[in-house]
Image (cartoon, rainbow, N blue to C red; front, side):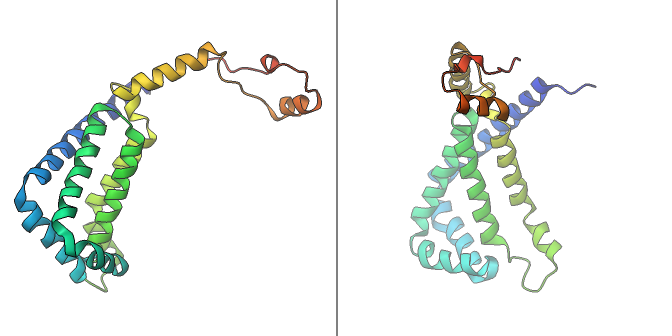
Amino acid sequence: MAYSHARLRKTLVVVRILTGALFLVFGAYKISSMEFARVGFPQFVWEATHGGAVGFYGRFLDSFVWDNTGKYAILLGFLELLIGIGLLLGLVVRPVTLLGMIYSVNLMLATWMTPGPDQPLWRYLDGEMRYIGLFLLFLLLGVGHAGETWGLGALYHRRRHLQRWENGGPVLASPAAEDDIEEDEDLPISSLPRRTY
C-alpha cells in the first residue's frame, strides 16, 4: 500500500480529537470535583515530596505547591481543560501541545523516583512510560500540524496560504541568486526563481 499524506493527516486529526476529548473529561472532573482538590492532588504532592520526585523538583513542590495544593489542583484542572479544548477544536494546537509537553515533563519529574533509590535505569523508564508516551504524543501532534486539518486552525492556515499565493507564491533564492542581488541592486525580486507545486 502506497504512502498517503492525506491519510497520515487524517490519522493525526483523529488522535488529536480523541486526546482532546480525554483531556476535556479529565480537566472537567478535576475542576468540578472537590475530592480531587482536597484529597487526590494533596496525596500526589505528598508522595512526590516524600521520595517520589527528583530531588530539586521535590524541594520545589515542597516550597511552592504544598502550602496551596487546593489552588494548584484547580489550576491543573484548568490546564487540562485548556489542552482538551485546544486539541478538540484544533485551535492553537502548537502552543497547546507545548503546554502538554511541559505538563508531562512535570509529571515525570514528580514521579521519577517512585521505584526507589539505587534501581536500574530501566525500572525508572518503565515507571515513566505513560508520561514519556504522553510527551511524545504531544510532540507528534505539534510537529505534525495536527490543527491544520478538520480544526479551527485550518481556517487560519488556509487564509495564510491563500494570501501567500496571491502575492506570487514563496520565493526560493539560491545562494548564487542572492549574490547577484547584492551586486546589482536594480534586479527586481520577481526575477528570482520560484518554487512550483
